[in-house]
Image 1 (tube, rainbow, N blue to C red):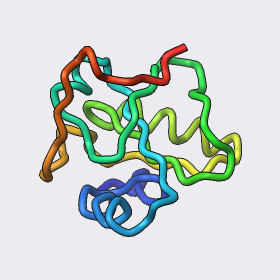
Image 2 (cartoon, rainbow, N blue to C red):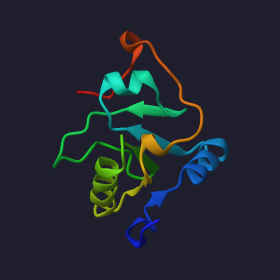
Image 3 (cartoon, rainbow, N blue to C red):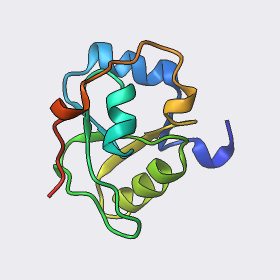
Image 4 (tube, rainbow, N blue to C red):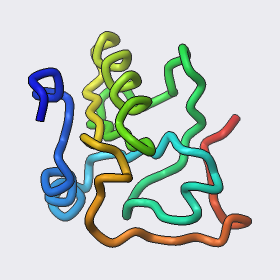
Length: 114
């Protein structure tokens, strides 16, 4: 773990613990719909990622962001934190997730796309 990861990044085991114990977290997956359908983390929702734009999130929730690696999710977490939003990202992204993934028929993938 790099020093820059401390504070806003969660390891896979830390995130799994939150999923199992905290019903108040919100997990947003920033990947494309097709990637999400092929495997996503339990309790995650797909949101549209547009570089340079903030995603719309509830102000007083703990937000966990997921991307393929951690580049997009880390950038978004930093941006959200700068707006006083409690945002974190999965260190290493979904590529670093060693636990079970959930699969969805792509036609049933619900999104928060506008």
